[in-house]
Image (cartoon, rainbow, N blue to C red):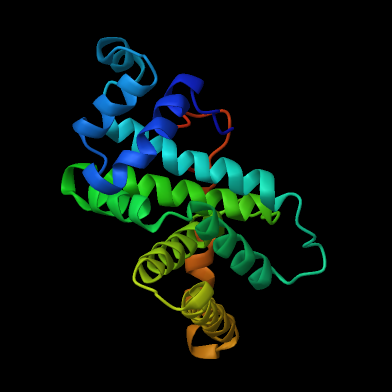
Length: 229
């Protein structure tokens, strides 16, 4: 279950946004946010021990929260899965809206020391999108779907950051092409299952992969999954 953002962190994050375009997600931005919210830096460090990094993380999670609220209002029951995914990714990017704030975040999370944090946030967004469209996979497909969507989402965001077309139309065309590539992969997988030369090998592989289960509430939620023995 996703945890709500600490309201104190949310308050600081919103105060920080106007400064991010100029100073990035930096200590200077963090100090400015503390000053504008009348929260001492010493006190703020109690719930934001990593300073501006925690605010950058909160900004991403805030976008996910807005996606969840907005997407549930959309009429998507008649749409195909690929259309639902496309709509969700497009909506998530539009929610981010401020390219400079997102660009500064991309720079921050591209640093080796924060790369894992950035990857985790993208994964969480992909996981949320699959949940919103009703994914009920329980085996290795739970992981493969999120891995592929994470790559699609991340590449689309990077394309969007450099897109100057009206209404970001070129970005949505790029997204359509990436989704189409994913569909081609699924088509190839389906063909391999029917191929006599690969059928036996694929059967052995599937039996092994079926033992891999999605995370559940009975294990440490910080772990990515478990092997059913």
